[in-house]
Amino acid sequence: MRFSREEIEAARTIVHAVVPPTPQYAWPLLRDRLGMPVWVKHENHTPAGAFKLRGGLVYFEALAREHPGVTQVISATRGNHGQSVGWGARRHGLEATIVVPHGNSAEKNAAMRALGVELVEHGTDFQAAREHAVELAREQGLHMVPSFHRRLVLGVSTYWLEFFESFPRGEEPDVVYVPIGLGSGFCAAAAARAYTGARSKLVGVVSAHATTYLDSFRAGSVVEAPVTTELADGLACRIAEPQALEVVMKEADDVVAVTDEEIAEAMRILFADTHNVAEGAGAAGLAAAIRERGRTGGRPVGFALTGGNVDTRVFATVLAEGQGGS
Image: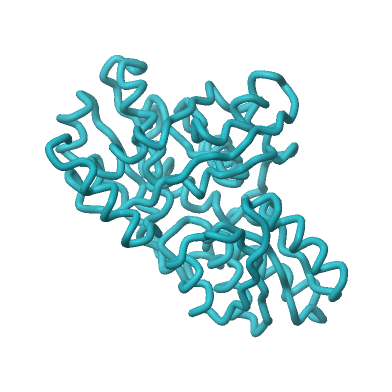
């Protein structure tokens, strides 16, 4: 998935009107803990607390320009994509309905409602919610905002451009760990790497309790896998997106899986070493870097703290479970 210079610059203009470039730091305590420089891109510092906002801004700008007759949209999410849709819809005066699975994050649901989104609960996982959203779109004549789309990837790529362009050529991190939910983040990283000419290896990170992309990467085709993660809802994908999988198979140096326990430990470490709050998916990159700390021989690595939207109760439990540990 490639983008022209004109597309990239237009996306930057759209995104940066709302989201200034987010910070990135090589935190000293992380360096001491892992024995190598660890660059953290802080997408938890966007107005929606996660990277997805960027994609929605670009998608809705094109929707309003190309389809001015659309007044109502619908989509499905576990949370961050829904906030992205809510932001984009509100910015262009559209009504938005979001379908979430039962038991979804209470605080992510509240954040979506605060953006004027009508919330519908259906099913037990993201796939069921998405299928219901497609059905409602057909029945009610609503515009279905997909969870994976070229323009969403284009918007998301702006943060990876910020990341890669911050390093002099040849001084990029040796490996960059990229969480994979439905795949827009990884595809965006690959597109930005190609655009900037960065040489970092890209390693996809999935939940060990939601392995469709890992299984599909190994098999060379889409393999459905059950979702049992209780912590990394942003990685809770049951069926890999074929278009995203194609990019992963072509551009990933590897795909690795991290457990809920490893993610919880990474969440605690991020809070202790950087005083940043990470949701489960947001800490997955660090969890992978810790698991693979011998991979680069001490050379720098990077990852995106993709979001900080974790429920208070969940985060309190994660921190409490680590007392006396890290």
